[in-house]
Length: 245
Image 1 (cartoon, one colour):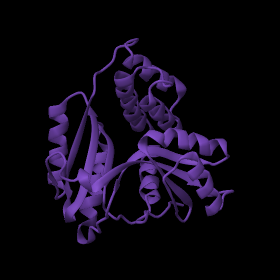
Image 2 (tube, rainbow, N blue to C red):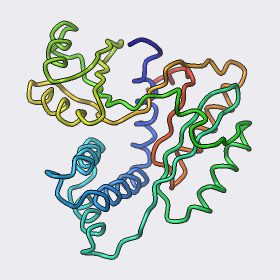
Image 3 (cartoon, rainbow, N blue to C red):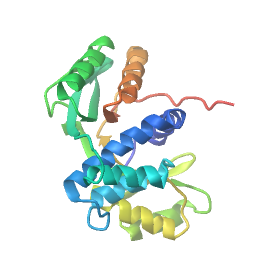
């Protein structure tokens, strides 16, 4: 697998999450609620819940918060019902964008999505208008420390991974979505420092937004800051932001 490094985008998003810890906990809490609603409160028999719990822990969400979200969703505490809604469209410069949301008010969320796309030179489309350009995969970001590429390749493939890409600072390890958790746990058991493990929509081809870069970045930022938005996927090649001193 080739193409622009995904780690640059993840670092950028993670930095924003670190700066808005309460917001990311709220978003993960909604994901926990949906997972429980769909498959029950036992992570041993609910793979989606197990994946979200792993995501919560990776984002340093306190165990009390995790358990409270699970109890709410299982009916032990008062809960809000959320619905999953996915929006597809184009940002400026022909950049394909997929937005996954969890909302308690579909009309509000739809209006906000349309407003943001219009404001920054994009346009919402019909369901399926860009998703055919993406493939859902599990993606694990692993620290390179202690493992050369051959060692990591062997470990990852033995654990059930489909592919591995060596980036400047990390390994990007790709799995089938259903095998993300098991592969990540196998790597951790072998001493690998897993920095991130999430299901992602990976674009088949990427687009350079060229003169529309500022509008594309602003749209993505504003979508990610929206309370109802869980994930934003796109096929834009974005420059890596410089690290702050």
